[in-house]
Image (cartoon, rainbow, N blue to C red; front, side):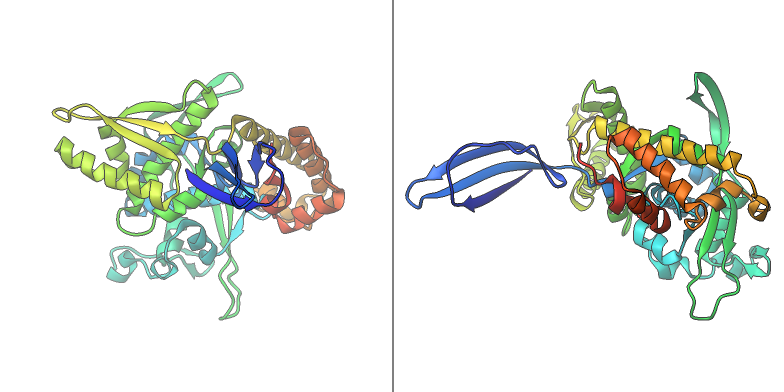
Amino acid sequence: MDIIHLQMKGSCKPFFIQNYGSLRITYLKIYCRLSSFVLQISFRLTTIMNLSYLNRIDRAVADNLKDIERSFGNQAGIVQDFIVFISRKLRVDLFGFTRFTLQEFCKETGRRRQELALLHPDFISGKRKSPEIQGYLFNTVFDYALYSMMERNIIFSSKYEIKNSGQVIQMYNFPILKEVKLNFERNSNEQKIYDVRLSNELLSGFLTRYYTVDSEAYKLIGKGRGGEGRKRLLIYLSKLNHVLLSTGASNQTTIPIDRLCEFAGIDDPKPSHKKQNLTRVLDYIIDKGKCSFQYEYIGSGKVSYMVNLVFSPTTDKITLQKEHSFYFRLMEGLKSFFDTKKNKAEIELDKDPFQQWLSNGMTDTLMKSQILVHAYYAAFNKNIPIGIASNIVISGNFIGGLLNVNS
């Protein structure tokens, strides 16, 4: 925690501040220094996760991270990053989430554009032939990863059960993309723009089954050697934190060290070496990712350690519930209107007409704005002028326009 000292002239009446921007004050002490007649205020602050960094990841994905590696091999890291990236796009740019550039992907995930824009080594060596769509070769590292996500699914090593409206649904695989489009006929200096259609499962998971994860921390800890393992471990830690916050029973849990090492990619057989390497990874996540949790090893290490994890509050349950309600109501309202919409002939040929309609802010702007206003009021009990709602639909700027709301 940070101690901040302020000096201000005035009376010595004590007061308490609960919220200050994105920071929450948990401790406040006031005293007067008579020699200089200056009031000094000392208070202790706990950082609350910036809501613009709050992201979602589908539980079916987060609970089966190893199956991404089994299904996609050396493309697994990019596939996992893409799922995190496109989930954030859904949250912050709902009316334009389908379109993005490689530069935007790299900015949000911490990856290097130069590495993803290279020709895939398998195509250079002749090991395989690059796939082609409408004359365009998907032959770079990133393009081929997108093509692979369209071509095949995440295959679960065992059936995965989810509850939906009181029913238990068994999932054996997880589709990611239905289609990938590009602006093929572009000028030589024009940036390549990807336009994707997400699977129904990915869209459904964003609304109904997810864990929350700090996307900024995810980006920051992924840079450098060992980044893939650190990101997997962060997702697992985020899952633990989300479950604890949802149940409200406790803010701590104890996990076997082998479980944490599995996600971090630490496979040293000696318990003492596991502890040393895991300590390095956890400290890196706390330091570079600015994550709020503490850990302590339990046991002598003769056989194995347990790790006690204590999570500090980064957001509150009520805020998460309001945001959940908002997105669910919004998407339900948009889908309901679209299903009754006439004159859809111009988009019926698309792989997913709803996604095409949704991501075009200039189509049915007024109706989308009205649905947005109603969903926001129902979730947050706050009115939005229709003009501001229309600007949000057109620009897609959800975070700047809506979600920086203090409960």
